[in-house]
Image 1 (tube, rainbow, N blue to C red):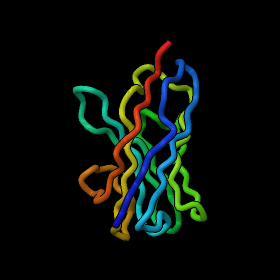
Image 2: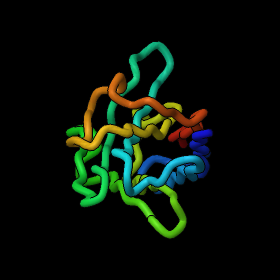
Image 3: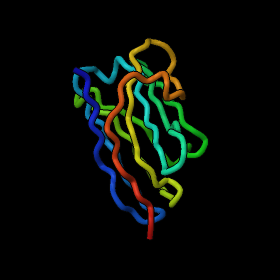
Length: 125
């Protein structure tokens, strides 16, 4: 049974940082394309970053490039999203997701079969 559990969200001031974690069970993160998405109230789910299976090529949305970093720890079977220089518009529920297909990592949410429950990130002074 695949389970993805996000943690690390919370309230942070503009300009601050957070690191989100996604602990995986029932799958091995290094053999899946892994991604981070977010969804703000009234908006569609938005791609943020992905890391490809095995080699670990990373992809970013323009809105977070240079501020967010996706990584994984194979020993801990955990995916991370380091978020720096946070802005109020980064406020959303953040989700990790897994795609079992051995191809390039996708920016499309429909390509991901497994999802975590989400963690709330609020950027406010």
